[in-house]
Length: 271
Image (cartoon, rainbow, N blue to C red; front, top):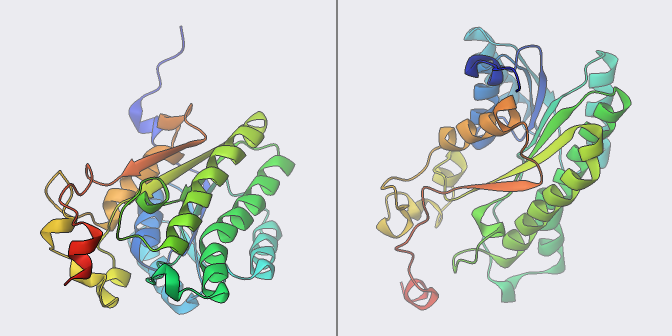
């Protein structure tokens, strides 16, 4: 019979170092806040260092541990610099969240090779590069940990609204998660994924066309409201905590039960 650990301890991330990419705002910032609330020292990484610093300052002001670091996920050298910064402080991240990505909105016939490559690099390659840094540091330190990759509902289910370059990239993130979980399980490293549905984020509000889905009945999930960042963040906290100690190589869908009123492609195209 195993010992009984209180839920508060299972959810605690006290003394853990967590790196979250693309965490200046939106889902990444929401995840960083929940991890910090659970006791982790969170590194807010983003290409926008000023916004990342502001987000980290907000967490510190609230009484949590956080700091900002610049990271351009399109540049392998930027990951190397972040790894060096962590090593110089004798820090080993035992939680790494690959959140950074982009949502291009283009029809397949309009895509260029450059467009395609950018979508794969910013969504899939960046997740691999981040996981590689985290995995290497965990293995060298003989320290078990968790790598959480943000896929998307677009990467696990077919829907008419999803651009092909984005959907393919996020499907790659899902398979990256499953395969690394198998390969690195022997080191005590769990690799898990989240596949959110439509989330109302600051980026969504700024994007013409995409922000039109806010309040649109066609994009409201079965549970009756559109999702916000914290809906994803709470699921992330569960997956990186000991509550999910035997979950690896799996993708958790967080979409409010699906948007069952989605229009057909032809109906949407005629608007």
